[in-house]
Length: 488
Ligand code: FES
Ligand SMILES: [Fe+2]
Image (cartoon, rainbow, N blue to C red; front, side):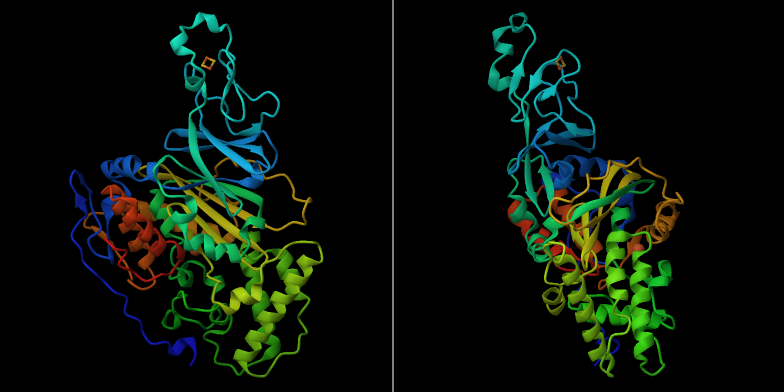
């Protein structure tokens, strides 16, 4: 049986009453798993409800730890007008503080830097703070009433921060369950990938004239690949032969689909190898971590490999050879690599993996891409794209500087994001069309969109974490998921 014979799967579709636990009614709620009310993408009241009830309660990827490798290194993470300082205290300790001087509120730092030795010095009147947040200097304290200079009252206000996977995550809610508990399966999956060893190689950002959810949804399904990224589809494939890259699809099937689907010609081993290399190069062009050019070069060294005559066996042999060669190439430089063959055998090559609410990891072979989306307004967001790779210990380059946001049509964007970004602004405009009331979703390949939208409703309705956390576990993970009953 090939993937073409896969039986048609009927995704479950349920209809539910709008979530409205008094006193928190949800505007424009998700009531079907295959329809998204269009106002969720531009209505100011809906956006305001998200700002009030969603963002203050979620774990947010605030920075890569590679940005703060040394004691005193800090970054600021900005979200919806709030600024949080994430600072490295020592090798094992990262802390976060709300970015406001306890005197008259000036933001202590901007961007990224190092305050080792001096600590944080307020630029207004010179009050100082240590890496632990304690106030260490107050200019002429006797000018202040004693009640205004109690030490515990002068320390920077801490913000929750936890680290996982080479990243620091913050949460504004002191009552939220731990990061690990919250993102559960996403962390377990990527622990096998050893994502903590991935290091940012470059970083780009885009100011996108779309709602933040619209930008994310462009990466939640592979259904658009056929039309938007035709270079990723084998010649001869047509929309008739598209099958979702579902959870159960192995890397073998995934690469088979991308490289040989639609070809009626008899199996030609040399052409097969060239087609695989071509696919790797196409994914690699300008995207680095998507498939790193280091990996392409290693695979190119296998051009003359002996393969079995049978297509399925040849694919398995080719993948194993590529995995082995890449592991070997990296290990010879002292790089700790994940077991790519184990990952493949266990169907853990998902392509794009979503971490609620706004982060994606796309590990592939030695490297990875990452995306993050932050709202800037009801119809504007900041989209960030990283290429991550592995370096020999001690030879990691400095983390790339925070980029100046580019326009979505900037010619410097690599080909694949250029194609995605070409749709997004016009989609946002299309949502305002007369008579367009809801997006209609495939309950199979576009189910993730419904699942996370319903999860957002859970937050907007003020549901307790006992209900939200199991739902997050249903939502995080590989894209192209089917629509699910997430428990509410
Ligand atoms: S506002 Fe910071 S020292 Fe005055
Ligand atoms: Fe895309």
